Image (cartoon, rainbow, N blue to C red):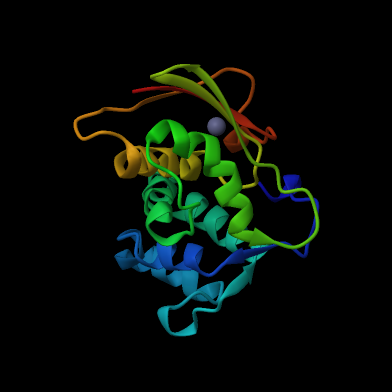
Length: 178
Ligand SMILES: [Zn+2]
């Protein structure tokens, strides 16, 4: 997945590491071992981390533990990251997730993003060409829905055609219905 990062100086906020450590996946000895090997432990949280280190850690978790772990980690992200204050619905969250992504990363270089296209009031397409893993982003979208949608609303995510980052492509497109 690192092939799409065009800058080595991009940093991600330490909140993302908190999400990783609090994902519940961290209690798995294998996940803990991988994170510690990458320098991520609860006692060493820093305000910013090199994005490439975080991505390598996620890649190792995917390889050695499985994609389901990445989804669980992605689901924790909205709890720990800074979002624009004016989000009042899932629809608004989808519009602003790209802005939130930029607020939580810094440094020069292209990092892709979250490109939202509304279909109607309860359906949308989201194209992700950021360097995070496919399963991680699906978990993140699920958690945004839980956080901002009306109670009782259900989200269905269908992976669209045209490539998947898990297969080495540069982007994934998701059809969202809720
Ligand atoms: Zn994908």
